[in-house]
Length: 280
Image 1 (cartoon, rainbow, N blue to C red):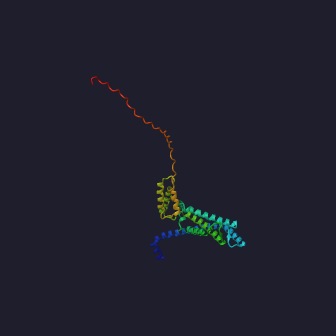
Image 2 (cartoon, one colour):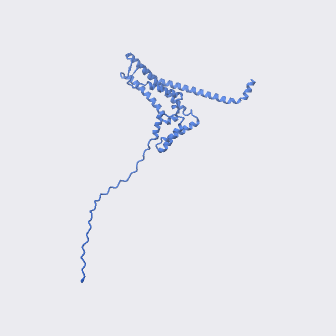
Image 3 (cartoon, rainbow, N blue to C red):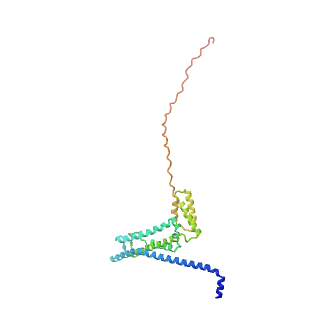
C-alpha cells in the first residue's frame, strides 16, 4: 500500500487527464444514447405512417391473386395505378427536399453534413436513395409483378425515413464537426455568398465574391457539379438595365431647295468710237 501511495505521489499529475478522459467518455455515451433514442422514435413514427400504404398494397396483391393473373396490370385496375402514383409522388417529394440542400450552396454551408457521405446517417440515406431509384417502375402504367410493387413500396418507405433522420442529424450538427478556424472560413463563405448573388452589386463585385467563396470552401465542402452550375448562373445573372433617358425628338428635315437657274453673263454695251481730230 505504501508503494502505491509513493507511486501516486510521483505521478499525481495524471489524475487531470484521466478525469478529463472519463468526463468526455461519459458525455459521449450520454449523447450517443440520446441520439439513438431519438432515431428509434423517429423511425417508429415514420414506419407507422407507411403502414397504411403497406396494408393497402397487401390487400391489392391478395385481390390480384384471387383473380388469378401472375402479373399486376396497373392499366386494368384503378387502385394499383393510384398506389403507384402515390408512391411516385412520395419518392419525388423526398428527392426534391434532398435537391433543395444539394443545389443550394447557402444551405450546404449551413448544414454541411447533408453533403458529407462520411457521416453515417447521410451515407445510409444515399444508399436508400440508390435502392429506391433502382426499383422505381418506368411509369404508373407499367406492368409490374406483385413482388416488384412490394419491393418498391418498402424502398420508398426506407428512403423517406432515412432522409428524415439524416436531415434532423444535419440540422443538429450544423458546423460542430469543424474546427474553429474552419468554422470561421464557413462564416466568411456565407457572407461572401450573399454578395455573389446580390443583384444590386456590380458584376465585378459578384465575380470576386464568387471566387473567394470557392476558395473558402475548398477542402471543407465538396460542391456537386450541378450546385456549381446553379451558383454560376446566379452570379452571372445580368443586372437589370436602367431605363434609357428620354431623348429629344429629332428636328424635322428641312425641305429640299430647288437649285437656282444658272445666270448668263451680261454682255457690255457697245461704246461709241471717239471723234477723230482734224488734220489727222
